Image (cartoon, rainbow, N blue to C red; front, side):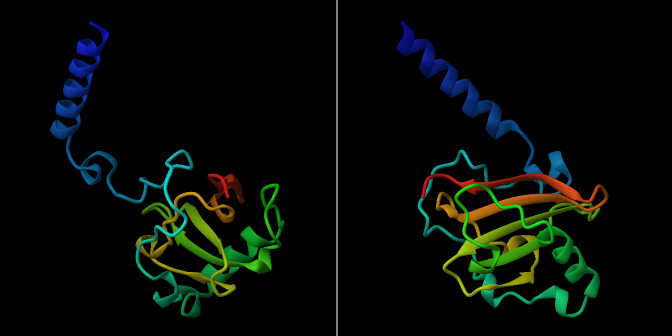
Length: 151
C-alpha cells in the first residue's frame, strides 16, 4: 500500500510541476534560480566558458569597486585556499542590481572578472575547490558563502 501511495504522490507532483508557468513568469527573471549546494553532481559539470566571457569591469569601474569590497574582508569558508588561488567570477544576481553572485574556482586561471550571470561557471560539488557567495550591495555584506559539496 505504501508503494502505491508513493506512486500516486509522484504522479501528482509531476503533474503539478508541469502545470506551473516557467520560472521567468513566476520570479520575473531566471537569475533567482541558482545552484543549490545540496544538488549533487560532478566537479567537471560546467556551462559555457566563463574565461571567454567579456570582463564587464573593464568598461564599468564601479563593478571593480564592488569586487574590491567583496574581496576586502578576505573571509573564506574553512578549508578554502587563499583568495589568490581562485579564478573569481562575479555577476549581478538580480535585475535591480542589489545582489551579486560570485563563484570562485580553484585550478582555473587565477584573477577575477565580472561577467553576465549566464556566464558564471556552474559546477556541482568540488568541495572548497569551488566557493559560491551572495553579496548584498546595499547592505555591504555577505548573505551567504559556502564551499560546494564534498571535495
